[in-house]
Image (cartoon, helix red, strand yellow):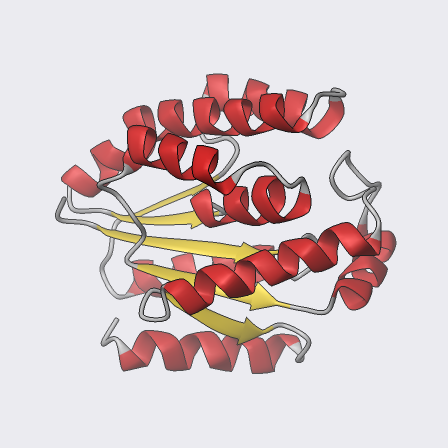
Length: 203
């Protein structure tokens, strides 16, 4: 792999979308070829699975298996080929989200998630993950003002507090890769935090 893999993470309502677009434009202006994508999603099959995940009732095990099925197709068709071409992949969510939502939020066995991770992409982790951290109650207020809720967004505050705690555990386990962004700040302040991270890496 010769390209660069950057992921954005955080609970729903943390404000990732605007900053993903901005970072993709910044890197493109510096000469990088950008592949901007998302999870679940990024391929026709993965997008179909995303729709099921957001709308269809299912148990936690089914949910985790569908997430990794979508991820495998996404990796095979989009992420790995782009990295092999030397391109920069900017992805909205990746496996940290699975450990946060399905592991922390749903209580799915972490050993199972680690096994699935190893089998699907044990050799491929992001070069950088920007974790947009925000208290669950603030995120809930932002979501309520922004859009109709999907199956995940309808969960209660306790669910999102568990998700947030799981993200923190992932950051503690991989501090060189996962950088916390305080997304309770204004848009400009969040952008400056991201700029500082990129500049520190010479990107």
